Length: 355
Image (tube, rainbow, N blue to C red):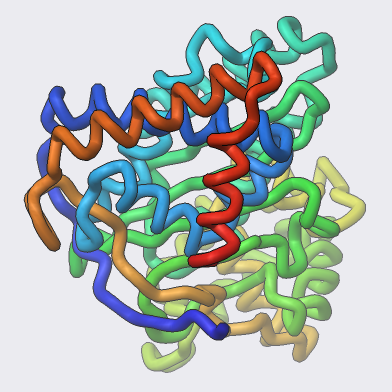
């Protein structure tokens, strides 16, 4: 069955009430434990990277369909619900909203020590996913939430979200490590939001020529490129690259850094510290003007629907039913661990019936 649908994604203020969030934490933990018992931790990553499953999971946890808070609250409920169980479950959660997202590298190092693997490649993946969605995909959404899921084997998934203040909407980005063949060419499992106007999409497949040209330009002396930027500033304001907000002096300083780094390919360029959205936009402009290699303007959003909320839509949370659901799942997991799998098997049959 083909699943489709659209809805707006308004930003909602406030927080989930304590009585609801505590239940969300218990139910999120119970669902993950049941999934791990049945299919292993890697399957949890696959589910989280599926936007339909993630959305349904948030609604099951009690969030309404029309709030941006589903992403941040579901991820935090998972993080708190699995805290202390990481070794037992084989799954850990790092990052979060705002300042918590900046602690991701330290948390991944700690998990690496606990699980016995080098976290360097995970920290790199965390950083690259954020740089892609903030800088290589320039859709007007500023990231404010980044959650990194990792298994004991080093498999990973990322769920992150950006906001656009102009119309107070949110956009969610899903990544699945096992599906990423190239960080800078169609790397997403999904991007969820309403499609908007032209988006500078340097990770689109059709931007391959632009990526190569941008990398080549980044290796050239800035004194050759900066005058070309000055010329570009005299282009008509209708030019789709919005050259009016490019500052040749500031970009020139970054171009000196890229020249010294001599990045071998676009991913290495993107990974350089200091190379942000404006630098890439300037190089994309020069790529088009000097080499005739325009980037893609295709919006990468593939699914469009809202997140959930906590304010009674489509109906208030039935606390008694919620608590019974948590109890049934927790009991099913406990039984399965001692060889009594009847309840988990019943849940599987229900999934096959309605899936």
